[in-house]
Amino acid sequence: MKKINKITNVLSTLLITLVFVFTAISSISAAPSSTVIRQDGNPSKSYIGTEGKDEYQWAKFITSDGKIAYCMDVDKKWPDAGTNMSLDGEANAGIKYILEHGYPNKKMIDGGEIDRFITQAAVWWYLHDIGQGTISEVLTTTGAEAYTGTRDNIKSLVAGAKKAGSTAKASLDVDVNNSNMTLSSDKKYYESVSITPSLSGASTYKVSVSGATGAIVTTTAGNTQSEFKAGDKFIIKVPASSINKTTTLSVKVSATYTTNKAYIFKPGDTSYQRVVALYENQQSLEKTVSLTAKPEPKPTPGDKPSVCVDYVIVGNVKPDPAKTDPTPGKNCYDKGTKYDQEKELTTRQTNCKFNGWYTKSDLTGKWANGTALNKDMTLYGAWDCGTEVTVPATAANTPLVIFVIGSAAIIIGLGLYFYRSKNIVASK
Image 1: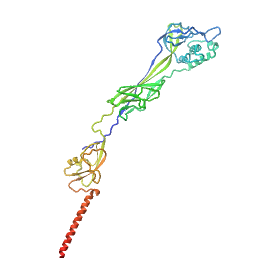
Image 2 (image 1 turned 90 degrees about the horizontal axis):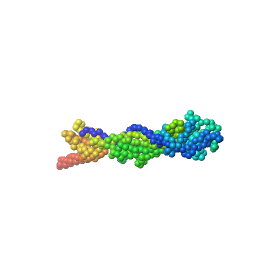
Image 3 (image 1 turned 180 degrees about the vertical axis):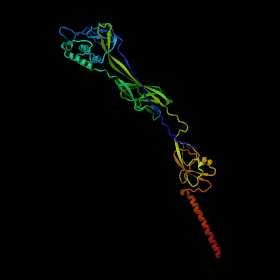
Image 4 (image 1 turned 90 degrees about the vertical axis):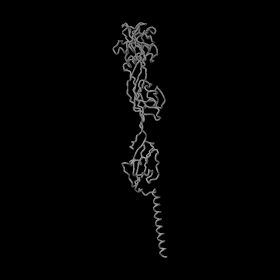
């Protein structure tokens, strides 16, 4: 019989290759493509100016969708109520800063009309400082304030606008420390390592998975969940029963956040001022990764745990080694094999008789043929090839010793008996 090599069990793994397919950023603009300007009450006087004059009279405007709008071109006349205006793009970070920190978002003096004037004046002043319009020293220096702190609040908004940089962009990334995944201990799921998205600009994210029946998203505690807080980890699980071939799963991580944008609207008649209004924009981030699930290899015949038997021949009789089965030494078999060793041995040897296998070296503890091999062991055997088999003197030879000694005693006894009988006859 050929020697069967020991075959170990193959641990199944889910090989996951996390390939970043794309990161998408989409924006939903809340600003309309056009609007109609209407006045929110009558034009108001300037809260900074020369006594008896009103150099910076201003009008309060509202867009048709209810947004407070501020005039941008101080050198032009304000638009009439009911003027149609079209979207003219996005204002810079300075204008956005003024609208975010001015009326109606922040209270400076009264939380009302004075603060609204301060915001309007700050827009004109900021644009003047960057070369887009002209204001006089009446507003910046010499004009009297109707309310203390009016000019200081305007200056504060303008200073902040000049320092405002581009708004930091929100971002989403996926951090995977180990792409290899394993079958769960209960063999019910293929599981990923915990995955931690890197998220900025949003407080929560969502996860969805497709590509395999029954695939789920869970917390690290094993609870099914689809929405997570920034910084939380998630795990992908796929039922083992769903993976019967190499399968690609698609995992989508997404987040939404809100940001402000200042949109400019322009009239058809360029002799009128443009206006600017602040809108909230909802933006979304999305990251898609691919996971490749490889099923556990199916067992093939003979893929069983193995056991090894070390065969030792004792005694002084050695048959032809070429016909000895098994070869003395270690032989391995599938665990559970039921093998009749003696039957094989006797069919291979014509002039020798095998005396059997034993579990002890003194040829005691007869091993029963056909017993299943379930653990490693050593078996001892001896051959009879027509000559005397000399086994090491052990307790196993005690009966033979007793027989030899007993026979010798009988022979000596008989000799003494005949000797004495002869002497008695001679004496007569």
